[in-house]
Image 1: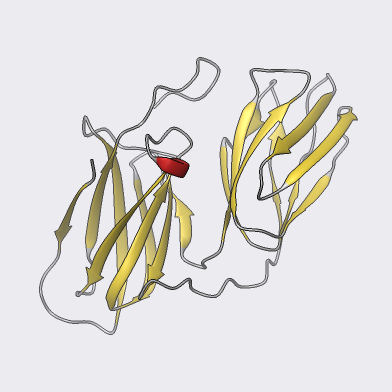
Image 2: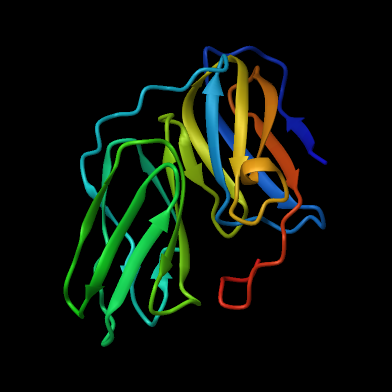
Length: 203
């Protein structure tokens, strides 16, 4: 079930600073949720990536647990552990395998298709992480307070897509149709999350 509410004044605006707040069914903030906006139902063009993103292997875990990157991004996978790692994904968005490599070594992967990319390590089964390759320039993940903000969102109808690796829904995502009609609107979305596995961050 999706519950959403708009807390805003009624005056129109040409563009808005939008805040999306994602909460669990119990009302707790849902961190590490990826929120993507599609004004008028269409993606905002993604700017060419100007940097290499990173998911580190440290203390026998991936960091960060969820990484949001634009289509066309390069992601580095440095190993800071004393042991070797073997990083892989079987995702339709990006299937790859980085065979065993040691401490202070690095590998880089190019992500050219949108979608979620679950990560694992063939040596350490408890290691997991997710890359969300975004097809819209308005895409970011929530912080510890369950919130994420976007600047200069066009007024009018917008599709809000919320993805989380433990979300109880097809493709781990829900969509809300909304209307941006003020300068500083706040949308609250409630989602049902599965309990995380023991080795993953608690929510």
